[in-house]
Length: 291
Picture 1 (cartoon, rainbow, N blue to C red):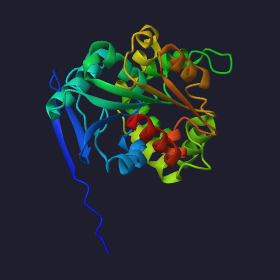
Picture 2 (picture 1 turned 90 degrees about the vertical axis):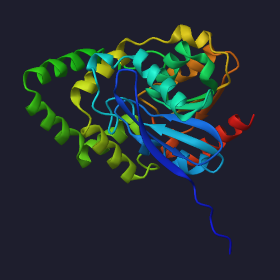
Picture 3 (picture 1 turned 180 degrees about the horizontal axis):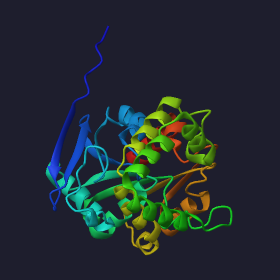
């Protein structure tokens, strides 16, 4: 009987350019593969990919500034796309790498687009999962209500932060909210393990609302369409057929605008296809990286 080899794991922090601590983990050995989760998400979204790719790569995860262990933010006004890009470049420098393969999910995609615009030299390739290049929430079911709702919540929170912090946690961290997140297309509840949805909900509930509001403002106003036309690195775009958060057309449009991009549609995939169909997604990414 052969013992299963141990997968090496390290954890640490590095100080970003403004002094914000950025927490990271590395798992495995080999070529670096950096995973970037979405706004208000957490590393658990990648656990299937970490298990799979850490056997052949050094998988690098980190908490986005303002999220979980990458707190406190030195200056909340530095929650910009530009500072996020500097964080990612700084992390790679800290770990001693000049280049890496990158994978982004949801908001992780515009995060990577902005980083590519500023530092194209650090990219070997990119995998975009359920992502967007511009605000995908402008109109849902024909109504433009997201931005007014966001502005209302931000204003009310400023008036009574303690009340709204408690309300936010009670709204997000409960079984009903988990069901709503699944039914809205955030997860395929028949495929994603319910504990993953619970972990996500609890992670979201613990995010400071001012951080969420500031980052969400940049999500609403980001447009990386022009960046797509200038990408000169291999790209794989993975879309979920049943993703109602970042519509299928937005993801297909990304692939269309990047010259030579590979496009893969996952039937019945939700907004978290990497959790719905981990084996299928992993094999497609593996084949892409091998090519």
